[in-house]
Image (cartoon, rainbow, N blue to C red; front, side):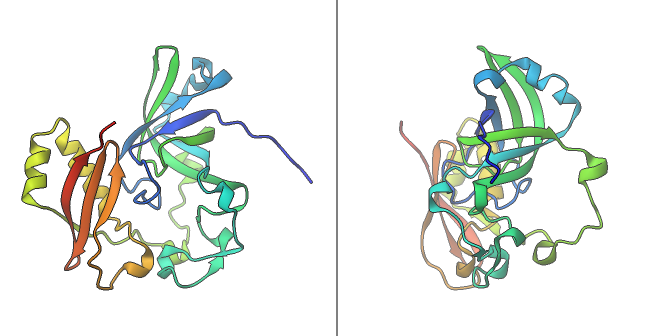
Length: 234
């Protein structure tokens, strides 16, 4: 059997401190992050010419899932989390070899304190994700307008997001409060709850960690209401 040792070329830094709440696909949320190249790959030679591209493909490891292994069949959220289909017919994070692929927007490249930093946005990766490879996105070959996507042909429906008065006041007084508000709105609009919870009565209070904040929210009459924003103390 063919075997190969794969070494990460970098680490992705994102606002997503936990798997819960991460967008299920890239490009759905305009979150900003960065890739920090590591080891021998932390050299500007590896990224020379990369800024001529607007988007990049990232190959990465689902490192937090590896110990749990995989199954031949999984329950995709698009089918309500009730019906099983083959793992190769989905983008499940529990898969052989634990390799994922996402397209992200390239925001720029920096070299600071002997560190190559690739600024990106639109990623769907948990903070600390190992990056296995980076490739340019080529519109003429990678964009296929006539492609069929079965159960995932259409983009997901978005939920209405409402902030209570105290959260709105807090955001208005916060440095980069509008940026945080937009991130919260875009993440929660995807409705991060398990698929089987949707379209059912649900009075549970949920919490999600974004960057340095713990966000409290719940579903009230088909709207997602943000009721608390707390800074996580170091």
